[in-house]
Length: 209
Ligand SMILES: C[S@@+](CC[C@H](N)C(=O)[O-])C[C@H]1O[C@@H](n2cnc3c(N)ncnc32)[C@H](O)[C@@H]1O
Picture 1 (cartoon, rainbow, N blue to C red):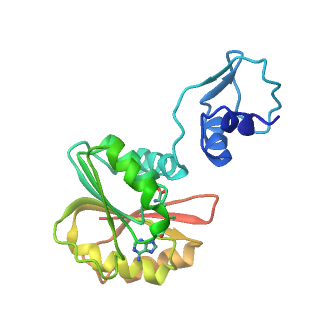
Picture 2: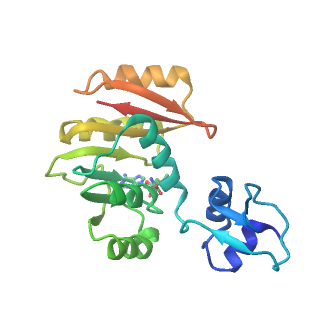
Picture 3: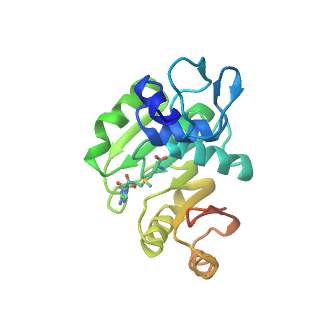
């Protein structure tokens, strides 16, 4: 059986995707040797060690971005727009003082409620960010909504006066010319693009300050 499938069967992870991520990141060893190939064949007699809890993909994504941009600090209050599986929420909750998540899809309600029980510094509002009135300011705002660039930028514009330090925009299918387009658009907000990171998945992470 494949290693990733086996780890889900054993209950270490609730999806093969999460098992794959952990294996690729070197958190799994077989007979004391780290294995990074999710498709590695196992029979069940091996001694398997897993050195992390299953975490959604977004958790690892934000960790990588944070390590590059130095985004989050322990005394920060964070707004996470588009919380879905809760990866950004969990990572921010482990690093920062307080996190508020906003998600409009009811599909994620049970999962996100579970996260608020586990992480006492997390709150969730189920609402549409376009119509939600945000009354307080946040040190960092994370915008990861899977919408097209134009709509994501409308959210950036709406929230630009609510951010004290930095905003992170996850932009889908962004090539260099769209990053330039985003930079020009953002010029009309009190923010500017100070760093850009691209991923293999045709996503770009724009740091706005
Ligand atoms: C790519 S997912 C975010 C993944 C998340 N950052 C994580 O770490 O798991 C995008 C989410 O944004 C939500 N979303 C899209 N438009 C929204 C809106 N207008 N208001 C609130 N949430 C929205 C979607 O329902 C979806 O769950």
